[in-house]
Image (cartoon, rainbow, N blue to C red; front, top):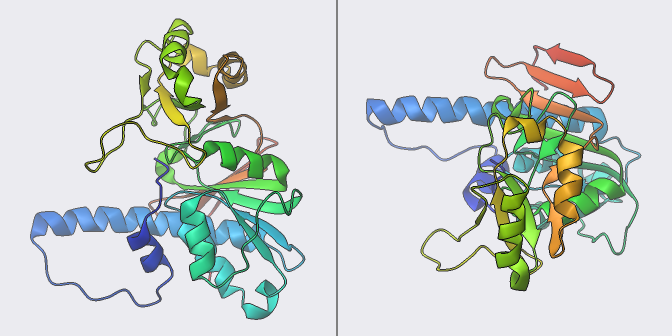
Length: 284
């Protein structure tokens, strides 16, 4: 699932020498090993995508959201101060803004730079046609704006997000950003579209009440069955037409390519023309 701001991960991703930790029980060590594989796969996807698509001539670059994105920024920084000096980086939310600022990269906004060379972003799930579910971190309105503004939109994720059909691995549902005053009626209408378990996303960590996006809106999570996801574009259109919907976390046929880091140290690249490539070497 695409996450929101993760300062611990950001610090780890931007630090060449993670701090030493004391020995842990065997069960915890096994869990840490699993997480290490996942983090390495995220890093592989991000590094490879940056190497392939962030070229010296690219000056306006969109930085997306999620747990893979710190590795995108890490790899961009590794290109050097000289090449980054004349670049401007546009964030999709608080997390990516913090990553840009902490990396001493120049921060910009899409209202200043409506034409973007490349945007690299994460995803909650990607199907065989590069349709994506996004919005687990409640940033999908701004993410979609930066995706549409980019000449090239690239998705990076680990192997768990690579699916044949949407809704297979990401079961929380389609994220729908909605006007707060209309959420109750929209819940009824989304359920009538076939999402019987559609629900308002509630805040975690002790805060009472719903999640509020950077735009001041609420989020409805709407699970649909496999038949609905057979045509994601049609599902997107039906939801988007509901009055009060601000944006829908379905990104249909927008990506040029999707990069997935695999557990075996390889990377799978899916292209928008249907071609699939797999490489076995780590970027240097």
